[in-house]
Length: 345
Ligand code: KG4
Ligand code: ZN
Image (cartoon, rainbow, N blue to C red; front, side):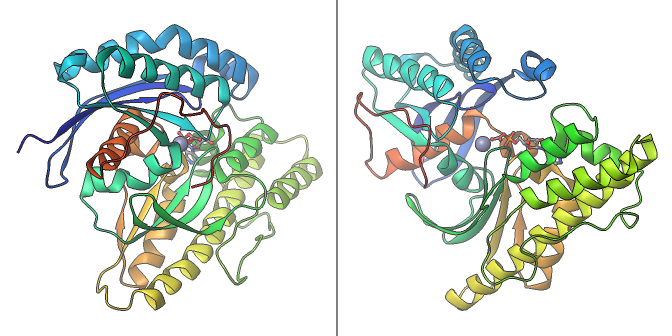
């Protein structure tokens, strides 16, 4: 079968990314190219992503990144069936760069445009990598998002849980900063925690045991700050112990929250023998968190699907794929599609 070839563009945070993905008529995905240019070095000196720097860096990189994605896939604009770009949510300057570029390509090459919700890209990635069938449960934990979603179908999402304050990745990044660890904080906290004693400091477990599947992390961050101040000046050992306590606490909280959602899924879909839990987002790289989730999933008879890390963090393939799934349903967007800083699924 011929299927469809889609170019996907992602510029909503600090990665300039483009990818060419093929979707067969029976719904199988194949990544033909996946180029991700990280801006981490541009932002490191500031300890976080600076929106204006990000937008400028996207402008400078986007053409070359798209050219590289097409070249690696061995195709030109004329071979494409559609072009997709993140239209939000995200840092608006960057979103405008990617979406406007996609519109220009769509107009010039006379292709359908798909203005994709970034979260939908994360939500559907497991169908690209593992051909997961609907419905499934998704836990999305990144620098900007912490959500538990029921994925019923393309465009049919129910939010079962979300953070009432900080995103989990943000909590990792802020904790790293408090402990004097480098940006991005998540990997640094995980590395430091490896040699730490998680039991030396006792931290609060926000939302643990509560009904529902919502999260809260800002109180935890405050508790880390207070513990760090009380133990100052911090030795490397103190930092490792605090990092370990933080990581163990968030892992326990996330496992507890997901347990509630898994039970609800079981109750709503009793006919599904082996339901699927998908994890996505940059924080899903964390091994402590992963093993906590895997234990809950296994205990409840769920299959845990974790797409490869390069497809969990922001990339163009997830946007191309979400576009391809929408295109297959006959959906497309006009050239007046807006760029949206906020856009709940
Ligand atoms: O999905 P992502 O690449 O970008 C978006 O935010 O959309 O996620 C980045 C976040 C950052 O907050 C980073 O600190 C966190 O993921 N992260 C981790 C780990 N690797 C990345 N957090 C905890 N442990 C890790 N190993
Ligand atoms: Zn993302």
